[in-house]
Every structure is written in C-alpha cells, then in structure tokens.
Image 1 (cartoon, helix red, strand yellow):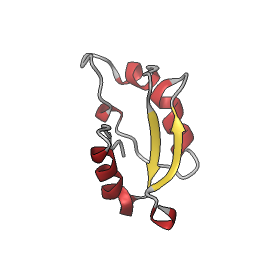
Image 2 (cartoon, rainbow, N blue to C red):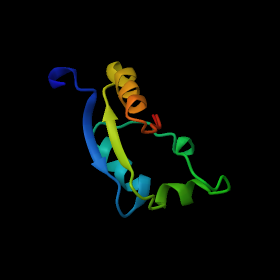
Image 3 (cartoon, rainbow, N blue to C red):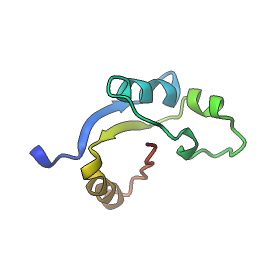
Length: 86
C-alpha cells in the first residue's frame, strides 16, 4: 500500500503479555491503552492478570489514526478480529 499503509509499527506478542508488547509499541510516543478492551474468555480476570497474560497468536499494531478505518476494513475482509485499545 506504499504511502497509504495504515500500519506504523507491528510487533508480535510473546512472553510478558499485552503489558510488554503494548509498552514496546507505544513506549516512545506515548499513548493511553484500554486494557479492559482486550477480549478474554474469563471475564473475572483482573487488569493485572490481563496485562501479564501470555495470550497465544496475538499481534499488536500501531495504526495511523487517520487510517484506522482502512485497517478495520482490511481486518474484516480477512476475517481477523481487531481490538482498538487506545
């Protein structure tokens, strides 16, 4: 997509869970992250449990805000769920 690419940064989630990958992806530029927006199977999980949980097969994308709708349409077309965390 060249200059129209909606993705600024992509990072795979490994050990350390969302807290690790999300800090790495927004750490330099800063941002607010809605941890409770992460889809979990067990709704009784605390924020601490969610932020450190090593979910499998997850990726984090930092998307240009003006291209977010394009990114969401691509996810929908490819049948991939997308969580807008902040």
